[in-house]
Length: 118
Image (cartoon, rainbow, N blue to C red; front, side, top):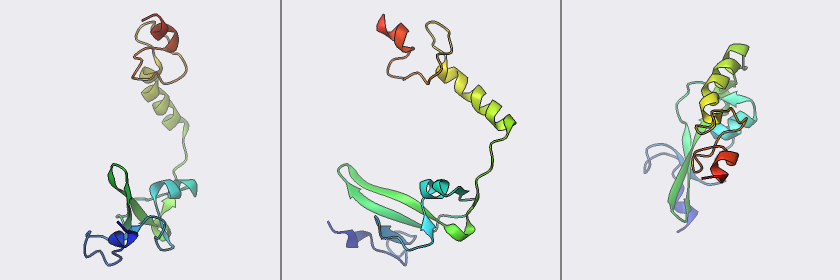
């Protein structure tokens, strides 16, 4: 299957402009690429998408316009506190009830010292 299958810059086939992986025009970026530049989509609609094949099927990534992107909002002390409150239950071991300082893996269900004894 060739990359030409995903070449649809007019959006006729997929509803929005679609490009094969690595062939998007300049001025468009994924969320991750925006974040690397210190930007965020800022409420804009998806401008286009990338599509590619991989062993389990077809993958897509949405693209946003760089000229409409806004700067990332800074983390304020209040936002940091809210983030800490949100993460605390994920760091607290249900077996020993201690904050272990890292996010406990769901596959273990407990901190590493406690899961070694199970």
